[in-house]
Length: 75
View 1: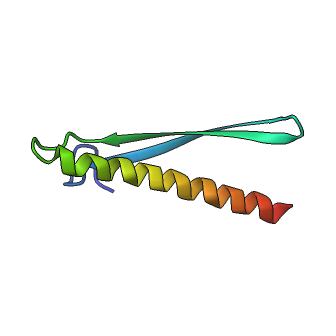
View 2: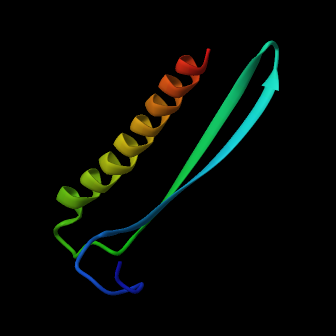
View 3: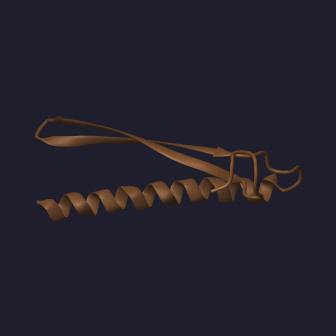
């Protein structure tokens, strides 16, 4: 890992925050993902920004799928 502000990547960090509540005979799960990225150079935004958003979305989907598999395996 490089210190903050160094390196050539656009996506610096991604954190997720989970809230779980048992009610109505089940468990409600909420996940909030926060990403930190650097400014995209002018002219590249139309190409880079969708990639950054897609990466965060794909990562969250994979995490939720893994949680679902783990919960179903524990039943």
